[in-house]
Image (cartoon, rainbow, N blue to C red; front, top):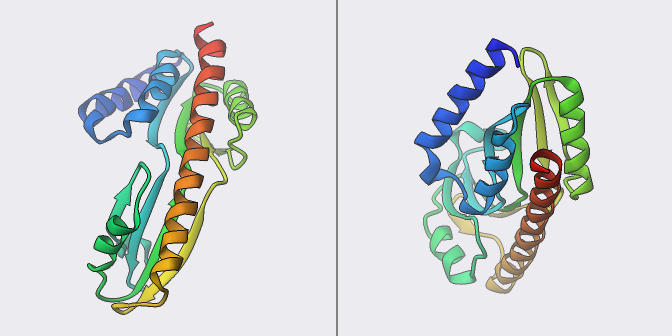
Length: 192
């Protein structure tokens, strides 16, 4: 392990310890396994989520405002409460898959992790960077982004929103089951 990798890993682990209360609890065991290995460390993660997001204009992600965010199943009442906060711009209902960014100490380890991710069903996984840091992105495919309003007006009815909640919950559950499989494969590979 190079000094640079060891230093960056210690810094990332210190940040993780400081912000552990912000980490999705159901992904922590997976992060612990990866960070236990001398070959990897994690830099960011999400176990999957459903969000209601207000965006001023298409492409203005930095100015977006979360009106509702759930890492577990959601119901129509919760979504309606979030939607009531919508004032301007575009309103989106989104279901997003689990995602993790993991730094590897070499390309071969990155490839091994990528293969385990894909075996677990994380088909959108890739080696994101081969520069100063070798970053593996582990991401699944379960997602949808649906515009539901604009400039304070909701452009769909409650039955459509109910369907989005049901589909979002189904995708969230499916993504989280892949986390369990990845955890099992990593435990066998890293811990033995």
